[in-house]
Length: 271
Length: 346
Image (cartoon, rainbow over all chains, first blue to last red; front, side, top):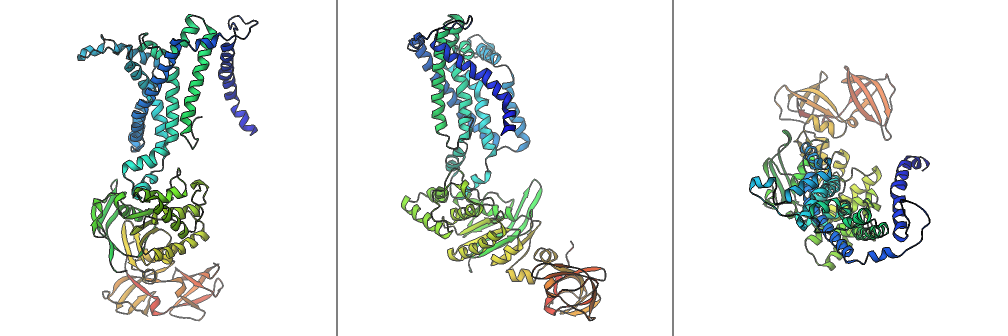
């Protein structure tokens, strides 16, 4: 155990300095009038809670939950068959296809968002093919953006559980009289649940907290909670309100995760 | 026994240009315990998987109960399999694992209950219904795997080296129990193993395979006493294999000496392989037809294994009567202990 503790030290330091302390700071900022740029005496305030009742904030929170859940569902519907296909490939082709699949993640996310943005305006390179899209500001634009950004994060955990799955279990299921569909529903899917939960978390989390993506693709029409928080901190300098909304977002995410993890009986996922 | 349940003819299968099964012909009777015996890579598991429907043959036909099997996917065959590593569903408990096949058949709940309870009794796992698969020992998992297969009342049960992962004592116990179960259920078993003792103990019929070819089909006693070729003789028990020449029916020459034997039907002066089992040779101190010197002796528990050098060739003899290294001895055996086989090229 002692040895283990030494090995985990860098991670612990990382977590404390970059996760725990900032989180506690946000928590403190959400209920006090502490001036973070000029630290001095401070007192507890309750104005932050009032921010949570503002229609703009509530709408943005609803938009975020709705669009992230939709994006996660779309990622699952595309990602599962893809992962299943990749996992059942012969080894030689496998490595190359998976590399191709991960390749987009290596380029900067902001650049990819901007690339989509230019395609979604009526005047774009697509005009060459006689296509003119006018999607900026629509849910469709945001969903396409989110799906393309986060699909690999759904697919890879699914691929890793499906790839490790003992193929004889599938044969056993068919041997016992189950059709392909029944085998999938009764054996493959339940056994890949841990991958589903990982994938959902990996997709849901960045979608819920996204702010660059909706800012570029919504043209200011659809506000997500990430944009609101950014505005509070960067534009109106309402640190107390921004911190409170951040905490509220954290609570919403934790609740969503608890629902997701509830389905994972094995408890073999990230959380 | 009597009616043919499975008939296999001309079965051929290759994986990536490697022929793993070459023109297999075989039939399995109803209520018969058939063992496919051979070293790993001999094609025995592939043959089993073809019958189960997990692989498809390149050529040849398997008929089952009068129907051509190729037309049926594995889930439509009245055949169940006990897998090598059991392949129990880790997300289901013992009851749910066993009930899986019955649920697929849409059997009413009460009937499923009844069937599962009675099969758990058969495999001696009463009270294990709610147990998690991961908390079971290897032997218990083995029994669940058997229960999960036989509860469906298949006409044919396929077992792919199901005892390989068990320790010796448990394995011997399960050999006996499987044989009992097969008699009690009255269904045909096809049992794959590389363990010759297991094959001889349990089977009605042993099918010896090597290199994708059936070497010999017969009862355990036939296979042991009358091996048809060098491979079978070597694979089943220990053997002395000697070059010989058949002079005429019932007369064979080896080690420069003529011997009376019980074999006939060979060409005159045909080169043959002679098999003599180590336990069939008796050693005497006086001179005889074949004479040699004791080279080594090892205590094996029930018997001594004695190596005797005869004309620079080793003979293995099993005897309860010890000898000293360097003893001059003669080898004696009866005509029926001399097994004459067609010469193998190997």
